Length: 161
Image (cartoon, rainbow, N blue to C red):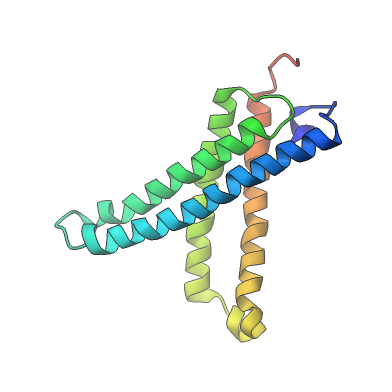
C-alpha cells in the first residue's frame, strides 16, 4: 500500500511493528465478529424473516447488505489507518466500498463454486477444506490490493506531508 500511495519514509521498525500489531488485534476480532454476526443474520433470516410474509428478494438481500456493511467498515479501517500517513476519508471510504463489493461477489461466487462445482474433497481428501481456505485467502488479498490501488488513485492529488 505504501508504494501505491507514494510513501517513502517509514515510521521505524518498532513503531511499524506496534501499529501493525494494533491493526491485527483490531481487525482480527472484527473479522471474527463479522463471521459470528453473519451466522446470527443467517439464523435471523431462516427463523424470523422466512416465516414472515415478506418478499423473498428482500429476505435474501438482508444478510448480503449486512455483510457489505461489516466488510466496508473493516476495509475502511485498513485503508485509512494502515499507511504511514492518513489517507483522506473520501478515498478510504470509496476504496472500502469497492473492495467490499468485490469481496461480497467473491464470497458468493466461491460459495457457489464450492457447493456446485468444487471437487476439493475428491482431489485432496481431508485437506480439501485447507485448499479451499488458502484459495479464498489469496483472492481476499487480491481484492484488498485492488481496493488499495483504487484508494491510491483517488488520493493521488493530495499534498504529501
